[in-house]
Amino acid sequence: MSESEVDPSAVEVSDIEFDHEELRVFWDLARFHAKLNAAPTYFGPTTLESVPPPAWAYGDSAAESDEFVAQVLADGHGATTAASADYAGELPETGVLSILCDGAGGPRALVEVTDVDVSGDQVVEAFKVVYRS
Image (tube, rainbow, N blue to C red; front, side, top):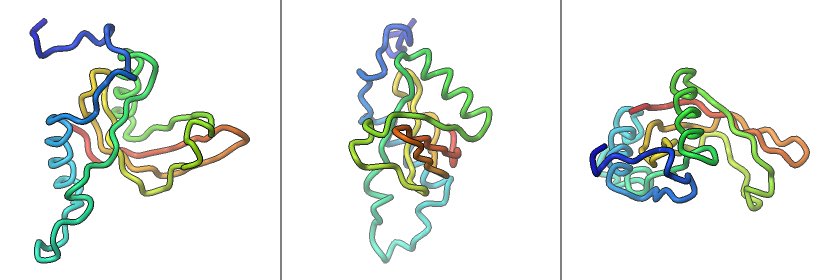
């Protein structure tokens, strides 16, 4: 294994740093391919051009995250379920973009929230893939 490769079994998802150059490069490509930078330049940079959306990985381990990413990429959509307390009062909104990362923190897909369902103390967030690397 080369020095730049990461052993996914040795990585805790909560330890991943989501602010790195690979993420910025992915965002530039995703924004272009998803046609999110369509405003003429005389309007100046938009928020989407200046600030990438939040990045996240699913699961308690790198292996679980990698399996989730593979399933989402195969299906073109996915969903997560979490306790509403995990959202600290700020529930997700439809149309919001985020970057789904694999177990090593590598960006794999730009996703858009398509539905949010709150049932009791559980939040189910459905999303679709807008761009994949």
